[in-house]
Length: 317
Length: 309
Ligand SMILES: Nc1ncnc2c1ncn2[C@@H]1O[C@H](COP(=O)(O)OP(=O)(O)O)[C@@H](O)[C@H]1O
Ligand SMILES: [Mg+2]
Image 1: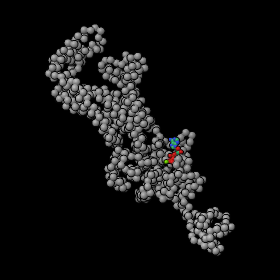
Image 2 (image 1 turned 135 degrees about the vertical axis):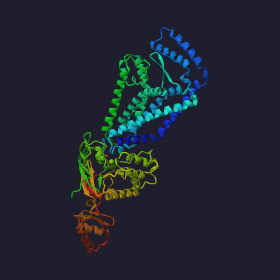
Image 3 (image 1 turned 180 degrees about the horizontal axis):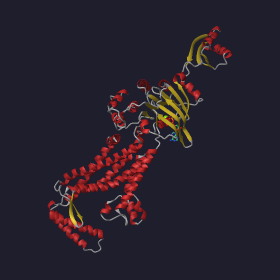
């Protein structure tokens, strides 16, 4: 075990001693700042004290909307819940999220696609890099089994992703407090459960949001890791994974609209678990447990392929 | 008492497609000796070494290191092996020290002070905290040697270690190897396609060709003076007369004419006799030079004249 931790330490050293890694962290910070500027432009110049009247107006509009009988049931439910939350804010004097740094932190979660991209690059380089640098020949002639080395590489890639998510959270908090101030930092997150508005811990809610993003992250990184192990080419692994990341969701939603049955067994039809929380699955008959099962199967297959290929491979050239 | 070999290779074979790239190779290497693998490019040296260190699978046969079968317990068997396979490729974005730290973390029960020890041993102290991308090839070679020695292995395997080194670098490297095998009783397996180098570096040499080990000999036997036949070059005057005389009286020996006289391969005892006869005939002998048969001659003889390099 002691030995294994040192292997992970090694992989971490190889990740964080590369200039590229720090460029990625810099880019993430830059992206957060830019997004802070943009959001500040949109929301910043609103009158801070006016929000109660604004909410009152919005509630009236929402109620008008509810009078329309053609409204889809899930949208109707959403609107009803929003009215409840808005009323709760007025009654308890809790400013809307977008007036505070929390709104910015919530909105910054979308920047995790950047983290997926970066982690794909790191994971895609982890094994293939050793081959292209030629260092694989020195790495594998040590008293550590190939399985352990592969696992240490995989884990260090995931640790990198975790560190990046941590950075994103810190950056968004920092940038958020600079642009939006810290007033309302102790306000709760509001949501409707069983028809009642309840107050929830902000941090837990943010962890949940990051957690949902991490499903996509985990799958894409595991995929890139497999391609990199099998083909020993980091550019192929990175390129393919990024291509799939951008095209996959589009193609899948297109096929889902066409009601192509097998689509629900593809990876991308199942990575967006938040659809279930919103009560709108991609296709009829798909459930949360179905998606989790499909994801687990892909996850296991990707990892087994990496493992078998890495263990059996003749390291020549 | 029979010495226990550090490395036993038994019937080692690598088959790719239909072809045996390494064919039924057997050999033992003992502590304190430098064993040379000599063969032309493509002979199968690297392939053999790759099998010994577990980079590629073994098609047939066994590799036993300090009595432990590589196939059965890779982690244990390989723990007493240090090596460089082909070029010593390092992490260029790390410093020399960080590279060594990396490999040190993969060892068990080695004190961290050992890193400084090997750095000193290979003479990299001044530059060890610089990035490897600033190193010359010679320095990388030394760093490669340092990582191979980090865990005080009992078997050191070096594949074409002098490739790309300048003569001074080669000489220095040779001295390192000598010291290591003598003082630390390490068994060294080194491969090369350059004969002159092997001659100076090794105690025993195994000649490998087309994947087969065709001969194993002590270097002294290989180059040795104890051979019966010697090739001698005579410088004489007048040249034409001497050549004619030799052709008449010694044509049953391999005889070659040169611009200053002739070259003949004869038994050692014959040399003074030839000299006496020439002098008797009134021919002036200016010099007699014996050429020790080189490794190259031996090699060409063994491989049936196949081109090396
Ligand atoms: N993966 C492979 N597939 C097919 N042939 C190979 C492979 N690896 C090596 N060879 C062949 O095996 C022979 C021996 O190669 P190698 O061991 O590198 O020779 P050496 O190190 O003695 O120069 C060469 O003829 C080479 O072409
Ligand atoms: Mg070779």
